[in-house]
Structures are given as C-alpha cells and as structure tokens.
Length: 226
Image (tube, rainbow, N blue to C red):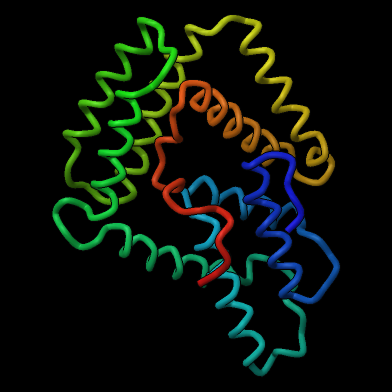
C-alpha cells in the first residue's frame, strides 16, 4: 500500500486497495462504498477485522456458482465484516469479569493520563478525574464501553483545546487540511469531514503524549487479514 497522506485516511485507503485488488477490477470505490467504510470506522472496527471480513466474503464468492460475476460493491462484504467483528469482540472481551484485554486497556489509558505532559490547570484536573473513572470502570457490554470511552475522550480533548492558543489550533487545522487535500475530490464530504475530525483529535492528544482513548486503537491498523 502506498503511504496515505494522513494516518486516519490510511484506514480508508487500505480498505479500497485491498478490495479493488481482490475484486480484480480497476474501478475504485463509489460514494456508497466510502460511506460504508465510514460506518465501519465509526463503529470502531480495526482495519484487520474489516479486511478479514472482505477476504472471507470474496473467498466465498470465488468458490460459489456465481464466481464468474464480478462483485460490484463493497456492500457485498458487509455480512462477513459483521461476522469478523463478532469474533473480534468475543476475543477482546476475554470471557472474564475483568474484561480481558478491555481491563488492561483501561488501566493503560489511566496510566497515560497520569503521565501526560504539558497540561494546564483545567486539563490536568480533568485528566486526574478521568484516570480515576477509568480505573474504577467495570462491567458493561463492549458497545457500552466504546460509547463511554468516546465521551471520556471528548471531555479530555475539550479541556486540552480550551487551554490552547488560537495560533496552536490554527496551525493544527492547517496541517490536517493540507494532509487531506488529495482526498477531497475522491470521497463524499461527510467522509472527509469525519477523517478531519479524527485527525484533529489524534494530533491534539499526541501533543501531550496521549493515545486515542479507544479500543479500536489497540489493534494495529496496518495488519493484513489473519
């Protein structure tokens, strides 16, 4: 895969390149396909899970009676992507009360907040509160935890941004917009805007040595299908 202009855009680029190469057709993704990838990204599916679902769907197609007909849309793979997601969620839960990998992730997030650099008074107080909440969090479904972590991350980012200068904010936005310029003509506006928001959040957190507070980011985005 050729390097994408932005780590967030790399998720979309990898899905497109893998699907197109497996389909054996030079046509790229349609607007409907891009919006489907956006839905998977918003649902927090790691790239390797999406690619595994696409692989399973296209492998089955090659072995079926309709194998001589080309797959026309990424939507053909949606059912197998959902199946791959269910397997990933079961593995992530670990089947124990502590949540397996989930519990270890929450503890790591809490530690990262405690070690964050360059925090102002407001964001330092928010980080301390969120660290305690992360360490105390138990139970709940993976979907509930995903939604809760999104709210936690939003609280943190808002505190960090409130202490930024206008110049810092403008510089970050300019860098993101420059990184995404090549995608604006290829994707629907809502997809580009989603990538832009994700990139701004990541860069805001990275400025303080913080990771995204998301289980999605536990999985390396560049892995090939297992």
